[in-house]
Length: 184
Image (cartoon, one colour):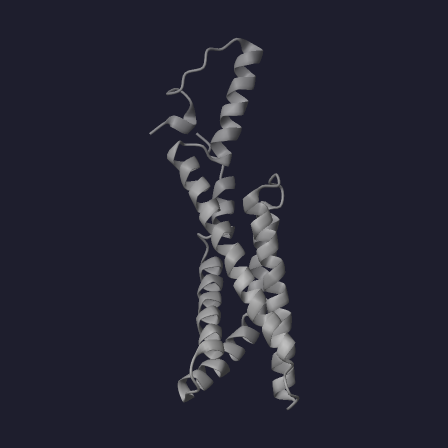
């Protein structure tokens, strides 16, 4: 029996891939270190945190772009939903966050006083990104988990649809246990 591997491709570009886990780890570090720099007391550890925050942020731009393009290419054909809208909005504010971070970094590197409104934009876009990405992940995970629980995946939906179409054409009787997607 041949098995369709389309859901594996989705899970490899979703949270199951090493790239997505690496991006999540980097974004979590960026979030924690950025909030520590913004709200923490003046301390050498915070200053070093800012240096690591900036350096890792610059190094992570290419993998972030790679991940988001790969993720978008996998899920772009889905119908518009709250999960998709939250993902697009989260990616948009993350782009604003990255661009504002690059400008603030450039200003600091060249000795120009950083603009307060740009630092605020960087912080606000961070908080908005968290407010959009966490529900995006939670809803997507919850729905995917519910689909797995009931045996409904992209592969199984397609297989069931094809079985129904074949049964309607040929008059064949459908049996839940006889279908390959339900085989143990």
